[in-house]
Length: 140
Image (cartoon, rainbow, N blue to C red; front, side):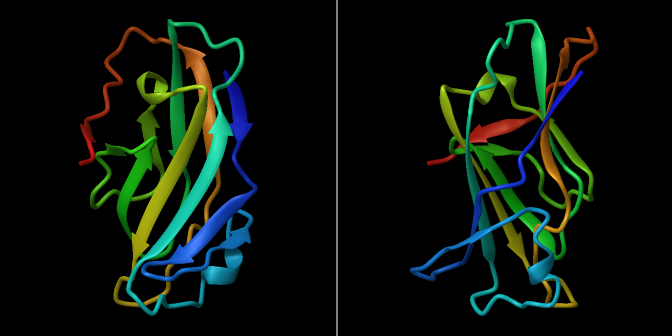
C-alpha cells in the first residue's frame, strides 16, 4: 500500500461567504468555531497519482471531523457519505482525472463547532477481489 497525505493547501470557506482562507488539515483552528451560515466548505486540488495501474484501488480516507458530514465530492461526483461516522473510506479510482478537487461540506451538530479535524489521505493498493464499490451520484 502507498499513502499520499493531503495536508496542505486546503481552503476553508463559510457557506455563502465571498472569501475563502488557506488552511492546513487537520484544521485544529475550527474546533471552537461555529459557522455563521451553518455550513463550512473545505476544498483541495490534487493531481492523479503517477504510475496508477488500472487494477489498483484509490481509497479516500477522512479520519475525523467536528460537526455533521453533509457531503463529500470528488470532481463534482458525490460520495454517499450522509450520516457517516469517522473514519470515512471510499474508493475514488473511477472518479480520478488528471487534475482533481475534493470538497468536504460540514454542518453544525448540537455543539455548534465545525471543522475538518482529522487527516485526509489517499491509499493506493492492489484490488482485493472483494467488492469495494462506493455508491456515487452525479451532481446536477
